[in-house]
Amino acid sequence: MDKKSIYGLVLIFALMVGYSYWRSPSADEKRKMEQARTEALAQQQKMVDSIAQAKINAIGNDTTQTAVASTSNAKINTIDSNNAFSQSLEGTKEIYKIENEVFKIQFQNLGGRITDVALKDYLTYDKKPVLLMDEAFSDFYFSFFANNRNVNTKDLYFQYIAPAKNTVTDNDSVKVRMRIYPNSSKQILDTNRYMEFVYTIYGDQYMIGFDIRMVGLEDIIAANTNFIDLNWKANLHQYEKALAMEQANTAVYYKPTTNDVDYLSETKDDAESIKTPLKWVSFKQQFFCVTLIADDAFLNADIENKTQKKAPKGYLKDVSALIGIPYTSSNDQSIGMRIYMGPNKYSTMRAYDLDLERQIPLGWSFFLMQWINRVAVIPTFDFLSGFNISYGIIILILTILLKIILFPITYKSYVSSAKMRVIKPETDEIAKKFAKPEQAMEKQKATMTLYKKAGINPMSGCIPMLVQFPILLAMFRFFPASIELRQQHFLWADDLSSYDSIATLPFNIPFYGSHISLFAILMAISNLLYTHMTMKQSAGTNQMPGMKMMMYIMPIMFLGFLNSYSAALNYYYFLSTLITFGQMWMIRQFMNDAKVRLRIQEQKKKPIVKSKFQKRLEEMARQQQATQNKR
Image (tube, rainbow, N blue to C red; front, top):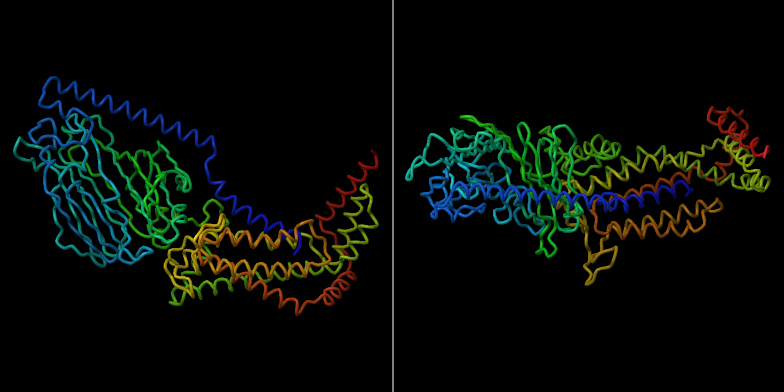
């Protein structure tokens, strides 16, 4: 193995280890986030205080109303004429259920909201339903001012207008309507005016329609109101076997109307106040997400994700979003939105043409990496999946195809390395002839001339690593993010998207973990054998001091780093190394040192045609030599 290949392997490991550190916020960023959070809280408190004072001033000395002159969500007595929706504060909680081919969805009249969404085609790692919305761990409500009182929809009992059927299939759809009416008098509701939530459920779709209608409320909601607040919170819980990996892939994502998709830190507590219009906001986990999408745009949003210090078992993160929904005072206003509640599957999300698929970590920040995944790997993977064969076999076929495509480069790299090894005695003679430091330019010129005569390209050892490096990183992102591999069995692995544990240790080993992944061990062993083979092949060539030991340590370091990663990823690296090992063995059968030496001798008989690049190098060498001679 030549120096350039060694540099490449070291660089790959350094980038993988440094990736997490690079994405972590700096100390200055942390300080700015904390300052922004403090300012936001101060502003919020100022607003609360002003609202409370306004209410107290409006109420005056009326002792029957003083008890409710606060910003709390306490229920107001139904005879309170200042509360436009007071008669909806009392009622009986009722549950309504609708389902289509992909999920079961549950509505509740208290708050007029979705309380539970259970996906039909997916289970958690412990075989429980995947609940993307769960009443016990989430909150979703609107707040606005009506008659100078803060109204929270989560406190109000809506009237349910049932659809004709509770099961939707194929191209059908049903609408679920939830309404609250303002007071007409102390005893009855004004049914000519209302706030309505309209949920449209489609057959075989993870996306539902969500519209808000405000009819005849222009004299109740303040005329200068230009937005209402959507308060959305959730305590996200574990769905996957590898809790730490799922936590590291969970955060709030958002799409500005004029920019690319962005997100909060997935590895640190983070918060952001977004003042520009947004197309959507999403609570994203490793393989699933709930995304609220505006038909037009949201005005702004304050988003946050954080991790509790003393979290219960199976807990991931707290996520929240305070979203400004545009509102204009009119007799009949409709605010259109959609909600995606489903898997982070590339083909499914991309079909909506909303950039939802950019929540899947395919290497979007590195154009070459995401291009490899989107244009080459995913279409091939999907095509092979259509044959209904084991995903372990699909990964094997995919690896073979990649190695076949890269074989010409591998072959040229081997030939170049073999030539370097064969002409080693001649390069040693040049080194002896020009041993003095001031003869460095002559030494370089003589070496380049020898390379040219032998037909050696000094860059040929570096090119394979430059080509394979983006592919290596693309696979590093692709396999852990592919929901198709989730809970897919292969050999001893029960879930190719997570680690394959053949034994659980009674203790935790730093930088390794508390389980033993067999695919990770096989990957490390194959790399050790390959390193040993290449070291023997490179015997006699120039070796960097201590690099031989480093090359043997690298697979051990990868073992610790990848032990908790996707079994599919380690399986791919294992197969890739084995196939490379086999390719190198086959090449050696047809290209031994004697044949390489003969090829070099034949090449030396040909006239040397200097390239423009070589001419420039020689001219630079002459100029540097002339400068040194003058000194």
